[in-house]
Image 1: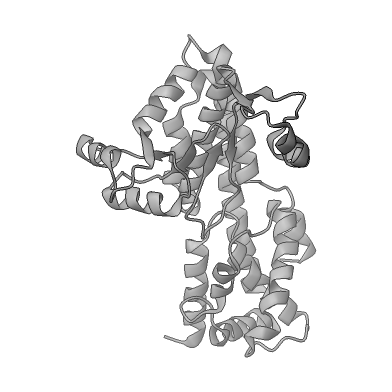
Image 2: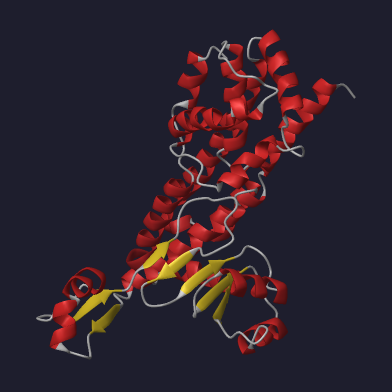
Length: 342
């Protein structure tokens, strides 16, 4: 097989392994583009383009998908390792690309266009189904059945969980009390700034009621193995789109730094639940297990005749907001490709 074929296969492998936003393929495309346009980079020397190519990538991805990569530097830099796109293969791509007027750049951005179209279809399902037709199984099928979205199935699960939990907390109008039980005037005076800023209290107002809230930790991070959500009432929530195993529970226990963990997973049999509930290697941090069956049931209830007007519309709005945050689509891909004359 020719070296050019190896280069193209390596590129396809990176594209197929990428999440929706194709950060790494975009980075490759921008290196090829700037080399074709005559920028002074030495394709044999990774350090001549390692950092500048991240800026090129971010400039384009910010325009096309509304965000930039938040993965660790180590994860971002492994694009140039031997099992991805090392300099020898990148150079072959760059030469073919230049000889063919940016053909490989165009190929990469056509792939991005395909992904964005799939994202638009998934969003359209949320909008068009409405409170009368929305079904969580049909929504998740958008990610399960389309190869271009399958790599992001974990985030699809995460936003469905967050939207539901956030809706229930708001509809129930959950409140919590926070109070200072030791009204030591000396401590309150000496640490007044801490009491005011961190606790939101004061010596004149030593107790308050606050609304319960659930927060997502952030947007997609391909290297993230930690916390997905946390609640200001003490729970940490980890979402896994896999069936529960002892190994999975152990991983969650080791990687989430919290005393009260709620684990959301695909399914779990009774024996595993019993083992996890009692202890995982002596650690009793997982306080509850919610399965997809529970989520499916709760979603059906929210959109049932009984609750759809009270909860369904709120849930659908929350889901759409989280979808837009996690999977921002763009109207800029066609103008961008026209500007580049692809």
